[in-house]
Amino acid sequence: MVLQIDNVTKKFGKFTAVDQLSLKIPEGEIFGFLGANGAGKTTTFRMILGLIDQTEGKIRWNDEVIDYSKTDYIGYLPEERGLYPKMKVKEQMVYLGRLRGMDKKKVIKELNYWLERFKIEGYLEKKVEELSKGNQQKIQFISSVINQPKLLILDEPFSGLDPVNVELLKDAVIELKNKGTTIVFSSHQMSTVEELCEHLCIMQNGRPIVHGALTDIKRGFGKKNLLIHADFNLDFLSEIPGVLKAKEVTEGVRLQIEDESVSQTILTAIQDKGFVRKFDLLEPSLNDIFIEKVGESYV
Image 1 (cartoon, rainbow, N blue to C red):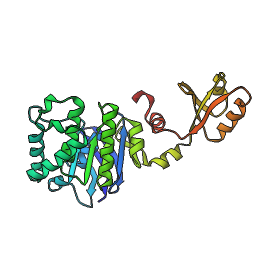
Image 2 (image 1 turned 90 degrees about the vertical axis):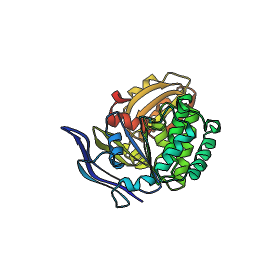
Image 3 (image 1 turned 30 degrees about the horizontal axis):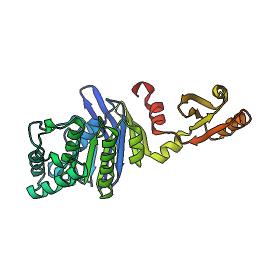
Image 4 (image 1 turned 180 degrees about the vertical axis):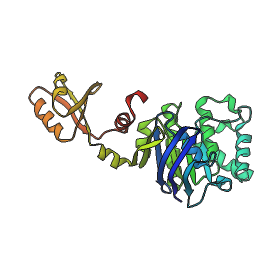
């Protein structure tokens, strides 16, 4: 099933939250949405889910409009968490599962699987308010996948989690993808998007400013990074033509250069000055691309 967004615009009065957005997201793929707060990501998710109507354009899933009849096949983790704090985990999941057409036995089977998967088996009869923030987030995630959705939308799923729990959730997302679930998610964690996504869209002021395969986006960016660690002062490298930025890091100095050919000029300039411990030519990171396209003030 393909999720297709064609020339979608959403206006709230005179304010345009999403402006002429067109995307095609294939079945079984993890697709990343990036952008500063207010870029239009959450509004796009809510339009996909049919929670709000678009002003213009069409959204289709398998060539059909997403409506209430299809909610049994969709999972959604909103950025604003919405669990019932006074309810126990088990009764909450049974309630949510029944709303999606599941019988109690199947809900309990899925719930037990995910509780074990997230190493929180003992929380079945606990109230949500008794759990830590991280474990509440795990339960919220479980609520979005309890029905084995074919389309899963995750709005900032990793925010507020420690590194161990981020890895647990990432592994779960990859597992779902490998089982055929189409996953669309937003995140401010560039390294996570870079690790999980083949395709992505960077939005600014409601418009897509970068869109496509991650490999193509990096290739099209052109600029490279060069990491050098030496036992002599490297400050003079910032004056070499083609060096755009120089930043001291724990490993030495990190240079942004116009293209790969500049690295040869730099290598010639340093080869007789002392011992060079590291000289690595690196692809641009997604963080580099995001900062340049969206602006340093947002990061």
